[in-house]
Length: 213
Image 1 (cartoon, one colour):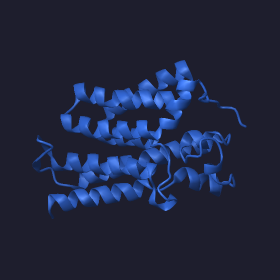
Image 2 (cartoon, one colour):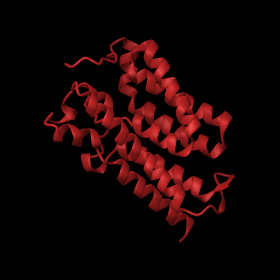
Image 3 (cartoon, helix red, strand yellow):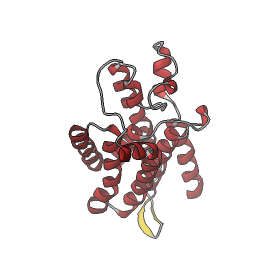
Image 4 (cartoon, rainbow, N blue to C red):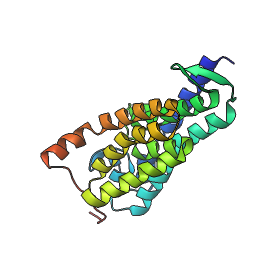
């Protein structure tokens, strides 16, 4: 099998797995209606939390994180470890396959084919992707999210800060190939949070709340 075909299959498999809208499925199964009609309108865990169901929000986080993580894990374990050169960098085929599959898993969550390409913001999926490909970077990103969330109480600001710093952490702690893919994902997270950024600048962004509405 050619390297190009391997990359295409990893990208397609990761995208389809990432496209599963767990937040929407769970809330509908529990009789809470269409999650897209409340709060921010996205299908992620933060919006699920706005239903007052902490258990569903937690399950959504776990499942959404698992999507991209599983995609990356499967790609890394099933693709050979032959040496290749990509983007002018010397690395291994299975590492690139994992990065492609995981990145496309995050992309699938953001733009799911089943929901006319209108999905979540990919925060949990990004964490799962990081955890599967570079655990120490994932823990640093999680720590960043928790610190900013504790200080600011803004979920969006926490996600944006963690996303921006992830490629920085990767630059100092791992191979350049990881930094390239993590930067792409960080840009995607920023793009998906453009409305939140505008509200933050205006002081209109809602803060994290654990009370049932």
